[in-house]
Amino acid sequence: MNKVNEINNNVTNSILKRFWSSDFAVIGIFSALAVLLHLIAIEGFGYFRDEFYYISCSDHLDFGYVDQPPLSILLLKLIRLVLGDSLIAIRILPVLAAGLFVFLTGVIARELGGKKFALLLASVAAFAPIGNFFLYNVYSMNFLDHLFWLACIFILLRIIKTGDPKYWLLFGLTAGLGLQNKISVLFLCFGIVVGLVLTKERKHFRSKYLWLGAATAGLLFLPYVLWNMAHGWPHLEFIHNAKAYKMVATSPVEFLKGQILYNNPGTLLIWLAGLWYFFFHREGKKYRLFGWLFLSIYVLLTLQQAKDYYMSGIYPILFAGGAVLIETWLRQKQWTWPKPILIIMILVPTLILIPFALPVLPVDTTAKWMQTVGLTHTSGENHEMGILPQHFADMHGWEAMVEKVAGVYNTLSPEEKKECMIFATNYGITGAINLLGKKYNLPPAFSGHNSHFFWPPKRHTGNVMIIVGLRKKDLENTFKEVIIADRTNCKYCMPYENNKAIHLCRGSNRTLGEIWPNVKHFE
Image (cartoon, rainbow, N blue to C red):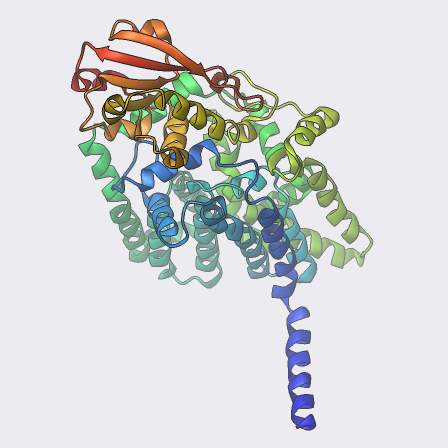
């Protein structure tokens, strides 16, 4: 028996030794660290505004929504059915995706020929982008978007490396599913077309598999196009209104600064080295398509005055290429001393900036820390800013607001409660009331904001309404009686969510059918 145990121990030790000396162990270190860090902050400061909206969308499954295709919503519905509505339940997939993002970046570096230090450096760089810490802290289509970009890039790398055109079929399937998650995959496809045209890889245009892959992607995307067609192209209206009324125009200089800050200033050397690798290095030039891919998307999004994070899915290929180049250069010089310096160069600003993007500190400490570091915060939108950056501010005030709405509702008679309908100006308030208001037995809340417009009330008369967010003078022409019953009060939320009037309205002089077309608000 002792000999058997000894053999088992030796086998186990041998397996562990091989694993810890393998490439995947190197990649896995910072992948695991990313997951652990996000697990610590998984509940953060509470539900994020958009999460309420996505939960509402998952209660109305469809082939599309005003602001997004349906894939992430369908996935959220499955999560809720299995795990429930808690923050841990809906955020566990983004947490795991944070680790997968780092891991796949290391795998791409390995595919480019990187050895252990290149894998480590690429993984550290993928771990470090400051904007990604928040992106993987909440449920949205964006964490899936990253993974679809990474998967497409990896498949494209395999196409170039192996010369096997059949990979285009897999690419088409992946891109098509990505388009059913977020249409930003079109940016990636645009960059790939430019890269193909400008390099010797244009030979793939003669392959039937490329066109079959493109057709596959198109067919998968078609249901969302048809949904838009059937509903009067709401997504185009949404994009137009967001650009015209909501988003702050970004200059080319601001966009570049945004890329540096989002990806962490400590990674700048790595991704610039990646560009050099793909354009000028002897080994990297065979993958020059990726250099043109990055530059074409960068120019396109700069011209569109896009948000910083729209490009975030493309940086892993630059991190991988840059890590391989730096490793090769250090090997040629026979230098080892810069290796720890490069890692520290990335991790020090990461440690300083993490609290700006991930709720790892108490809220008061977070606000003081930002003042101490001297960080200013903008939202990229036309809104007055509060104490916290918008991504943190939008996690505050919801419970207190719903409690106040419940207080107003409980002043009604039993007869009025049966007739009462709640209306709110935006999807955050509406979704919060519908999710958090269950424990107060509140009736459903409605809104004209984005996809809520397509879910109008059916049994309500509008004769008794609680309305959150509108001005009293805008309601007095519609109702016989308008009372400001209460106001929201929140120190840390966005200023436009603070001191909002909660109106109790009675005696509508118009039917809801007459009112509803005027409440549409796509933005």
